[in-house]
Image (cartoon, rainbow, N blue to C red):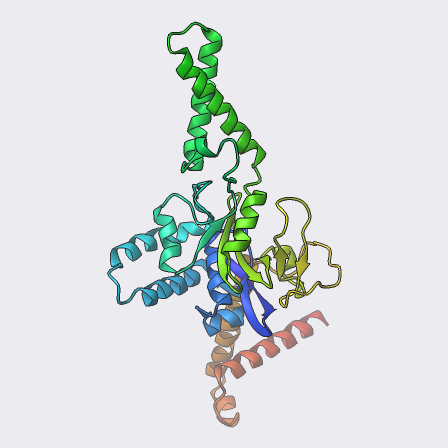
Length: 340
């Protein structure tokens, strides 16, 4: 598994960010991009040159960052535990949000510990305003707990329909009512971002912050610039569109606005299927190129071994690159002569 790199302009500097692969906007991608845009981590020279980073390279980079963050702290056990699950974060992560505990209110899991060790905040906007009718009923409960309330309400409603004179009628009626109210809340906010939540996010995220935003099982790098919230565009469809870097987060649904790395509106750009190679394709191309180079190098060495007299007359010893280039040229000449 690999991620294609894209060079973007941000704050008048050049950065390389990771683009989505077949796993979409996963937590590992969002975390890495947040750190890259903060210059908290750097990509190795060979990775930059190849234009692609493997999952192995990425986990090593993030692991080194965790160790450097907590070198003096007693967090070895947590780091070891996180390292075991790190590769799985490329596929996603279970996040169980709370609705009245602010933008960082989620149930703690070992996966979330990875964000803590990397000093990255995870935020969401699936929040309920305090004035809402169901606010007290929802309280500090998580999404999974609310789903259980809905299930219990459905069971209670079915029991009442079966026997309206059941002995615990009042208890079942209360469960059925709560379940119905919670069900409508979850349906009404199924896009997992409320207008109230968006307002709270604007207040919580500070100018220039770089955090990870969770919504609908997607993880995106989020920042704030001149009072507006923006999501980093990592869609592979914009891999070769340098003018599209950020997406404004100012509505809870519907169309939004794309901007450049300097947060300016670019010329109109249609979302299209990029012609550039994906991370996996680029890795395969690089491996093939290396294989071709090694083959040409081997042919060159064999040719020198078979013609010692020519070697003595050839002058200074050639480098491996020169041998490979000469062998490749010789092979092309042979192919051309065979075609004549």
